[in-house]
Image (cartoon, rainbow over all chains, first blue to last red; front, side, top):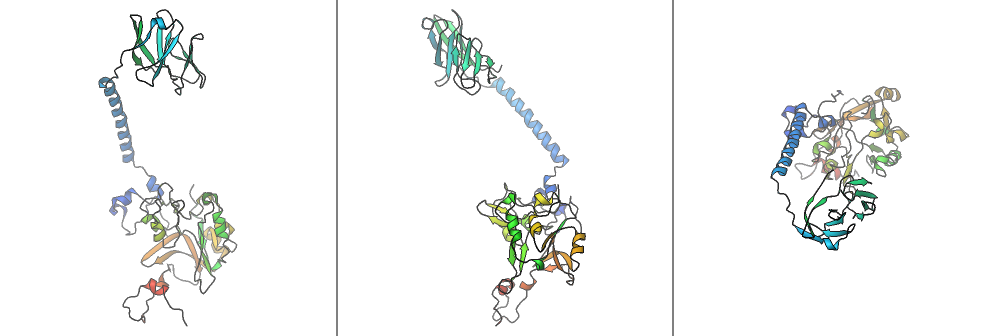
Length: 181
Length: 217
């Protein structure tokens, strides 16, 4: 028996050399070494195409942030000053129903409003004004009452903040800013 | 780690006593629990009790892989034709029908072809395959050529087989008596004998003619 070169491809039934074989036979060799072989040209092609895809993705993100449509927020009246004492809080849905937000009156003229869903796993947070924090009971996460930034527990991102306007003795919500830090 | 090239599998059908130990040992393997990759075939059940163990012969040009439309059967660099890749096998039965030795078997419950891979987990570590380690008459022998020549001075290994027009060379070797001079086992030769005296037929399909041959009175 002739010892075969382990790098050699299985001889096709017609016995012709590899160069004369149809493309499918070269693309789907029976031998594992040939099947797993990646040529330099193939590897460089992979590198170039992958890099191009990443670069194109960056351009796409840039174009989206420059020309993309920003969501328009409605101006909604949330509360009357007279109805909310200092240290009191109020839950409201903004900008759409099913998106709960919390309004807290910190001082005579200081109002803040944050998303009521914990940034960890979306449990509803509980405002604890006396302790100066929002508390998430699911995994013992805490957020600062004044800034919405995470204080302790699993959450790493701050609560999205609602932009507020106070005029004529009424509080209006004018927008929501998502924050990453 | 590949199977060492100096380790070969030898089958000596003349030594097979039909004890089914290999079948049992194979089905106890954890990689295919309960399913045996080896089978015992009766050579001529009506006339003889002679059996022969059938394992994958690990062809140099594996017909099963040639006919696989899903690219599921691969041959590793040590010449072992591996069993079908689970994720690729489409249970089309092409390999089952094409293999001249009748080795691949379809497991319908798993929609997967499974065949002998010469206990790749064992042989790649230098161990004997399960069947060869339990065979009491050593009809299945796994070892080097030198060991075999010392143990079986009257036998000779053949690794080429002819099935009709197809010649197959294999990694697994078949032992024949030393007096048998040929290097090619013409497996289908008995089926190809024409029957010149057959009445009323210009051409008799050799395979069918053999199947329906009358018993001599």
